[in-house]
Picture 1 (cartoon, rainbow, N blue to C red):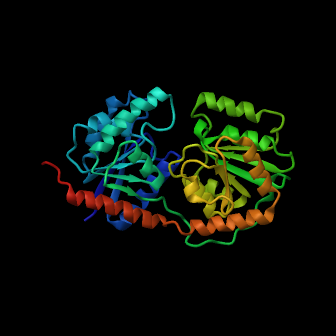
Picture 2 (cartoon, rainbow, N blue to C red):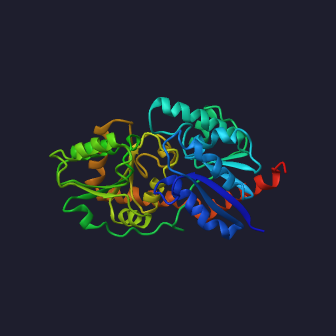
Picture 3 (tube, rainbow, N blue to C red):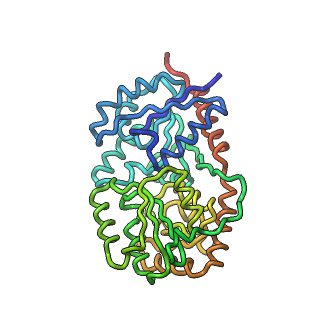
Length: 359
């Protein structure tokens, strides 16, 4: 018998970000493993106005055997979930309490609502041990907290094809940064670090949604408009996952100096593509790579060190190749998406079998 799962998320589930991609991959593969995952979307309204829509979404979700609450929707749903549901409840947590964007006051308010949601859940699923520790340190000390790591697409490391000279645009290396333009992702830091390189060293490719934060969008544009970067940066905007994969396959270096990445699926995608990784020694990245082996980690906020890492890899093809091969080898040790889906679905089955609705 197929297990019916409702996954409540915020807005369109086809949005391009790590959390949404994680959910879609699992939902696509779930029927192979005895489950059907149906998305229930909260209307995309600014917090806290979405509270008025939450009850209707919860009623729709209750048509399933198990309800999964995405952490992008948890602060909106928290006050309603605190009253209890007539279905087993799982939290799919991809971010810290209160999220990472917005004002400190807004994050504190959302964190209180998140606590209401997560304390009501029978189990919590997180993508990394790092995030599990963060939640426990924040007081969400639940024994039913499971790490279900995102999967990978390649079965084994493959020989990397030669980088694309067109991406380099006459320079020595093509650097790709895949990041939506929000402050914690460090897009301005990448631009400043590349601007400090000699003009013949690298071409920078920026991939990601650009207008999520109006103030930061302006900061990035101002930085890109400096004389040192004119003609050295290509903006791709938000593109579909296959396009991202194509850029990674043709580049030389991947960078994402994020200050707070609970997992960082795009890091592992770049590793699968055989790219060396450059980023801050922050978030989950130090758990994904060892500095000097699969890439280079630099002190958080040190733009000069970021420039030095780009220069080192851009001007040393042999070291690039060695680190990229090591990154691909380490990525091959991660679970496949099929294995990730099996674990996710198994937890849903356990919750469904152990928790009984009151009537």
